[in-house]
Length: 174
Image 1 (tube, rainbow, N blue to C red):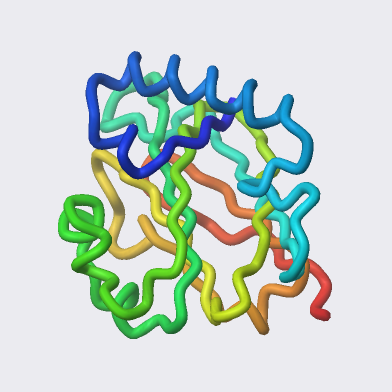
Image 2 (image 1 turned 120 degrees about the horizontal axis):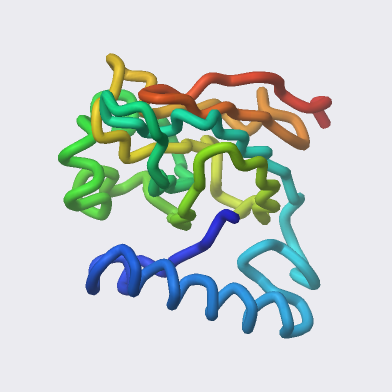
């Protein structure tokens, strides 16, 4: 199950507390009419869908079994900052690292062997979508994926494995 966490919540406390609080927040949010986080009932921008699929060895850290992975989805006004960011700097202080380009950030917890769909409401000033995985042993720069919204169309499918994000397919362009 993919869980969304607010920026303040992800900075507070243990992974178990975050997961439990995130699950409760999702249940409450999905129960309310017009959940703006996922774009339901919102007016304005178009919606696009991210399909997040993970292998059983997701974020395995060199072990046989996979581990949950924290994933952030960013809407940005450009890609200059995300293209040169390091994972540690970005995860430590996204506001400073993406200063001037960060419009919105959402965080999800992706479990090994899962497939989840996340609907994102495009912000009017957003030009780029970025997805970042906080892998324990990242492989080069594939801990991040970013694309101009004009190239994504209405959806993108991403697969997360032991140490990487792999683009599987983009949807039809609008």
